[in-house]
Amino acid sequence: MKKMSYAEAIREGMSIRMRENPNVLLFGEDVGAFGGCFGVSAGMFNEFGEKRVRDTPISEGAIIGTAVGSAATGLRPIAELMFCDFLTVGMDQLVNQAAKMRYMFGGKISMPMVVRLPNGAGVSAAAQHSQSLEAWVTHVPGLKVVYPSTPQDALGLMLASIDDDNPVMFIEHKAMYTMKGDVESFEPIPLGKGDIKHAGDDVTVIATGKMVHEALAAAKQLEADGISVEILDPRSLYPFDKELLAQSLKKTHKAVIVTEETRRGGFGGEISAIIAEEMFDFLDAPVVRIGALDSPIPFAPVLEQVCIPNAKDILGAIRSLI
Image (tube, rainbow, N blue to C red; front, side, top):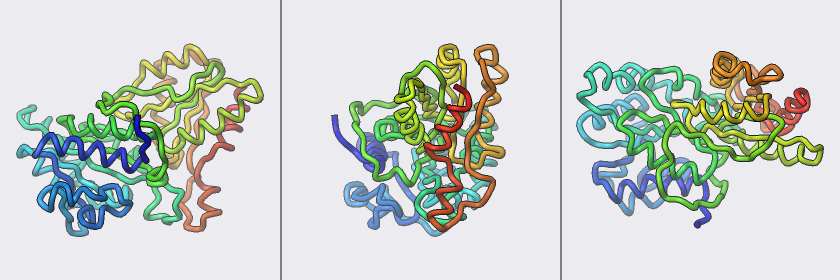
């Protein structure tokens, strides 16, 4: 067992595969000697050299386009965008090329590329650097989407994402980079397998990313009231572990969904729809959704904290159901 930060675990996952396979490479803005905007690739330039850890121009379209071309011709690229928000600049290459090429070529080519997307708010980076855009990429057929909440999950999911022959969107919450946790396994975590982060009997909280930790904080407070909360972390948004969700709802019969994204049009609504369409008979109460306010993320820390969900919001939602 090792104690690692979230950032260190991501770096370790990339480094393991780069040591094993010379076709794996990393590129993005300032990922080289500088070590990445958030320090995730620190030291990798010295170990793997400038040909495999490459700085790019400030052009997300070029970064994703390079990933598409190199993946199609036999490499296994990892492309880092400095902020998830800048995915907007590379959406044509991602949505109209990466997501569709394997299908349109009848499976004759593979598209083994990972796009790393620092996501979310909580660091006072203001409206253009704080969004949670996971619903955008989960909407596109041909893309896989993962969102680890712990160092263990970050390492295991990175290994599985690099191994996959399809484009994988690897969402990383920037406010968790320094968060430490135990890493017991250095094996891949299969995409599409969720995890119960806290077992309980009275209500299921389905949480993603940093909201997993807000849910854990809420669950700890509710224990004093005799309320038992089960926390389900999907880890993989697509493919999504419906079986694990069904098992949990059969036990608790109540669901609270909490994601940091804006509630309107968010992926939390997709989870709610899955429950309504496929697991309605398990419910004893309506599904409750929690998300960010319908507003751009403010720069001011006090306003930012009002805008994004927290443990207090989860507490209120659970108490309204119990």
